[in-house]
Image (tube, rainbow, N blue to C red; front, side, top):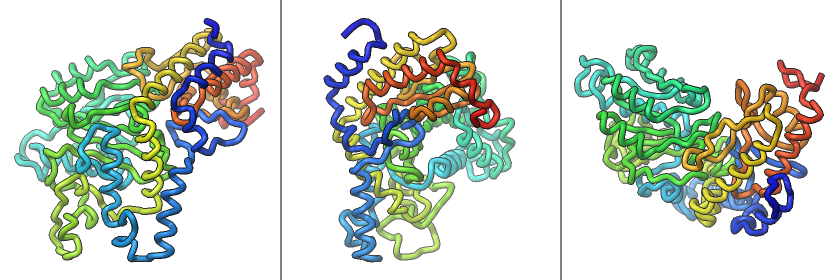
Length: 436
């Protein structure tokens, strides 16, 4: 190996020494592509297909008897999957459930915990000042949409009670600014933040933020959409109150895969804001009572019947992650993103890295910034490099660790260099992405 990161032999040697290299063969890689969009949609694996095919066969062979006679049975399937995911996030099995969509889970959990606080119609002191929810201005939009809707449903003005911590550089959030916001706003009852910012890839210190929220007397919740499956968490140990995530990014469970949620056991038995029959205590569910009896677990926040065909791939996909080991996955992820950052540093000055360089502050993708990021992203895709663009100037590149090689990262950087050197991106219109 040489000291030149653009020496391809360096990448080849690192792939040869990679203990997780064999997992790539268990995924279907689009032919002729460097797939770098696993933080939006993970790739198809044989393991996910096998568990989906099994459930389809059970449906064909058993019909309705699958709820009891399938192996594992469908009736308890969401709870079983929750137990499989729990070690990835540092939780007890009954604190995790696979259910609903991410946005639905934000709705039900924010609504649930608002209703436990003074100042809301269902709260202990309905005439008190309504509580605020502390977020940040770089959040994924759906988080704010759902919280605002929950405020409106309780007659609370979201413009007054949704407090957003600002960014100093439009890339990252200073955790000290979160702590300062808590000091300034006595009314904050819930802190709800992402574990990883979707655009820049900044990884938050969940333990520190949870402690800050609790010291303030607030609940701490997190959106793990861009961290679950690539960053290990210790939610229970850190005292996190609740969390949500999707299953189609680093969990690789397919488009529209059922989402998941975590609720610390100290909150079990709380009445969910969006109650549904499937969240009833399993022991009495088929007694068909008209009074909801929530399960004494995270399962209470299930709203509808477990969607077996969008949940089944999770079983196989998560088995790969658990087999590989989340700590080894994290180590490889950091090695891949470190390598990518080194390569970007060797590109012309127009390219910059918008992701924190400190590994303790970085998730699983790298935000490569460029004034022509949109046109660059289109040119990359036409050259077989699958990335995505986030306004105003970010090409997100995600070397997902189970199926990405160091030589793939090298090829991406080489392609970026070629596009820039030849001004190839100028062939793309900035308005609609078409070739001019």
